[in-house]
Image (tube, rainbow, N blue to C red; front, side, top):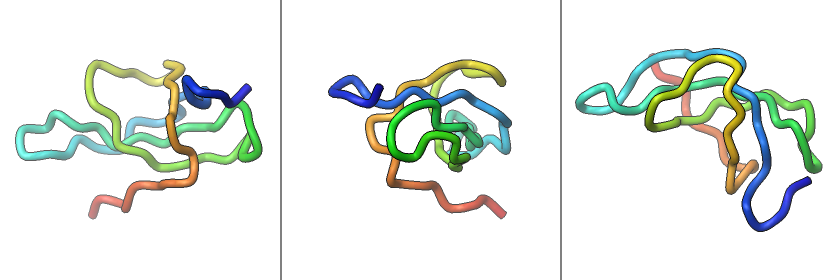
Length: 68
């Protein structure tokens, strides 16, 4: 359920590392709850993450640009 703490999303794919030092990972994540449930969105995430992790998105409307 989407509320003040965010919307849960499962990491489906790790796309590519980005950032000056490779500290940001571009991911594809599947929204698990809320009005956009089931959609797959491209997001940037920091920290130690892997496929299958559940993350909390504070905003589900935004989507990251694709890295070339």
